[in-house]
Image (tube, rainbow over all chains, first blue to last red; front, side, top):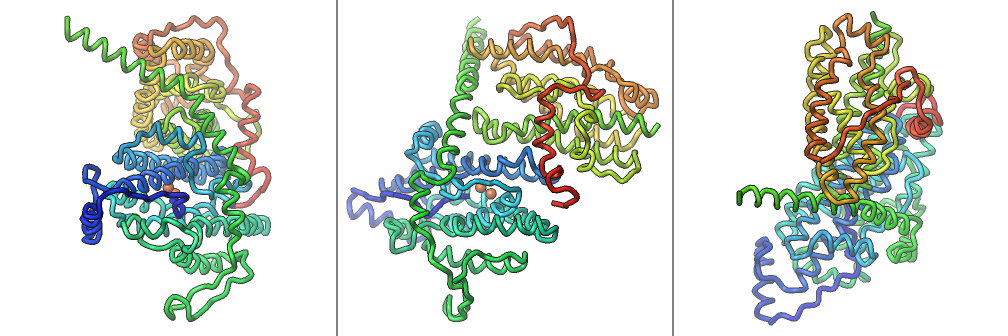
Length: 333
Length: 250
Ligand SMILES: [Fe+2]
Ligand SMILES: [Fe+2]
């Protein structure tokens, strides 16, 4: 994943009306905006923040699942999980590259993540205490990511849209793989079924929160929609996700932990859809602001990897410089 | 023949599983993002080879044990991996050196195994020989960068050499089972890899400005299940699910 409905974006611009109108006209013609094109400052800033948050989410997202690589229950699952976590790292890499086209460096973005200035999806601040969580994350978290990201494949900013096309293919593979883990559990023993149910109990609501606050509270959504960075509102995407996911839970024989969940035939312009209970937004904001169970551990882990790796990065740089110097000397002789 | 080949295949399979496990411990914690992608690649190659080797060992044994039963459901004294692969990761210098030492052995080994009279062994060798060539390149480049990088990295690299070198000798040792499998032409003779191993390591060490230490007392015992203390902790993680929830499929 995992672009959460953008947290705290500031799309304020100062350009002339004429410039803004011309830019908007390009957007309205569905032209892709490329790195060297003129763009409003707010557009650039919104994208830097969104792509950065998205990249950080991929990187931090490696940790909760990485937690099970050494304990995976079979060699097949171990290999699949390793490959999945590696894919997420790859997503982080494409996204950092897409953000770099807007004039920020990966180092700057990393520093912002480690200092707590940059956000990442709050879903990764929940722990993965059981193996079932690996299935549930694939199914619900990658599933929610896909809902968020498919429209991003048509994002007005070219490099972001292209990165998303590649990422989405892998996310849907992750989603199926996660669901398949849960099928094995749900076809298994009573302990395995309980493990799966306990896992959906813990992940259902946080997964719904991945779409971000209600539209009414999502302050900068409107501008992002106008710029076609965003194509659907948070609530629309959340509803699509619920409608797609509830039948999958039923197929598994798992209960969605929402007593107010009810089929409503009049929803979605008469096509039908699910009414659902109220999300605990206090919990959402608490976790976004750093008070989830794993916020501190996630940053501590990332910081440790970064700090412990400093000597390696320095050595690589020093070696490259020595090499270059030797080559110049060689050429001069 | 079947018992020695079974055991010799387990030696190989355990080497790959345990080293793959060690490399996979890095996933998400690497010094740079590019290594968070490269290390899982190596781990995947190792675990992939282990799976093929266990599966084949299980077929040879003929008692219906599959890859997971062999990988997860033995006691610590029954694991036959060499001691090198179970050594803890320590730092990035140790990790890359361990990978290089092992790959520099496995490359000529798999090349020789392409001539095996056993078709399955030839198949596994054909796939692995290419993977291992990449491991030598990747790990070797890092050993050079770190050995000839900063003062700190050079010291860490030389420390890793001092610490891991006593475990090298075991790579070339032939257990009675490995010998029997070699005598039948099913698997290569480990001793025969010594020259190639030394050449490829010397080549890297020259560029890395590292010195090859003399080892007076090599550390042996892995092939007979005499492991170090760290091995038990590795196995308690590896086996956790299979032991806590026996007889379930995942
Ligand atoms: Fe991803
Ligand atoms: Fe994913």
